[in-house]
Image 1 (tube, rainbow, N blue to C red):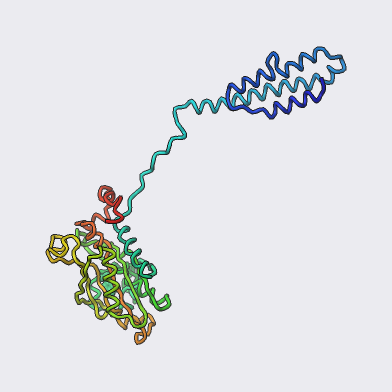
Image 2 (image 1 turned 90 degrees about the vertical axis):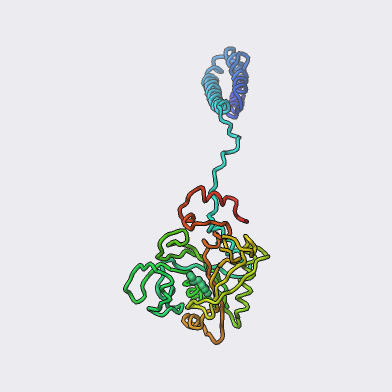
Length: 345
Ligand code: DAH
């Protein structure tokens, strides 16, 4: 026996690893069994002289202890694994799918509209929901005390001030902010939430959503407006869609128009959705009034533009024949789940 024999076995024991209880038991027999290599050294130890006993006694005992310890450690290790694999849970099974929420119909419509105008080269702009009187009314050519303000019943945040804060009644305020900030030419759409002091009913709500559009460049004409709206209507409601424009009034556009699209439910024959007319009103629009351009520092002799604005709830109502505006805000799961797969209709 040499000290090297002991060292060699020690290294072997330290490096020992097992994957199953059977392997541990085999290792125990290999080292500590009757014919095991550690036991063999002890047998040999008995035969050596006194001097050698002094030299090998201690390392040999330590080796035996180490082997015993290592076997216990390995037993514990494979024992744990064994316990896991024998439990009822199968960790390789696919997880339970988490139910994903569905898109809100107003979000679906907003994303479609934004997607269509992005394709036409429009940027998206957003503005504050708590606005001042200047951006909601004054810069849009509503003089103070003008009766046109009555068309939009306003929630004031701070009344009695020269330029009171209020909840914006339309997203046209974002066109003013765009004209103030952006370089010309401007081509933006502005989706957002708006607020009006209306009694809540099937046809009116105090919160709703709009998308505003604005295009300003040199030489923009009403024909450009008509073409943009026609292309949009066909992308949104189908390639057969026709539009018609009716003269209207908005303080910030001159001339102004309201746009109807041909009813895509009865295709012009007349149904209860279009109230027998064959047409559905979808938006207001017009050529930006020169006063509005000038208020934001744009030279109205050089530049012209068009603007339009539409209500998202109304468009979603037409698309999915929703008959009550209140559904959009009540978060009734039975309503919301109807739009699980309604990305395209
Ligand atoms: N702001 C109008 C409203 O809320 C909608 C509108 C009409 C926007 C005509 C426009 C427009 O930009 O040109 O009723």
